[in-house]
Length: 53
Image (tube, rainbow, N blue to C red; front, side, top):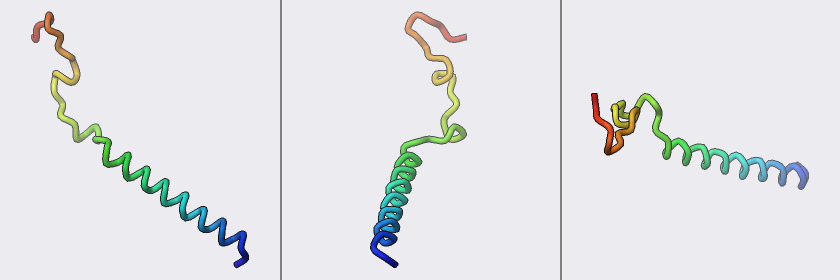
């Protein structure tokens, strides 16, 4: 391989590793909708002057 191809593949590898790291970080910080607690408080926020039915 010539020098330009080596630089391209190293850049591609670094870019791919950065994208994988960002994806893993986003996945760890996010909760899937089906894993969230389905509470009435989350769906309908309760204000101090309102009453629950």
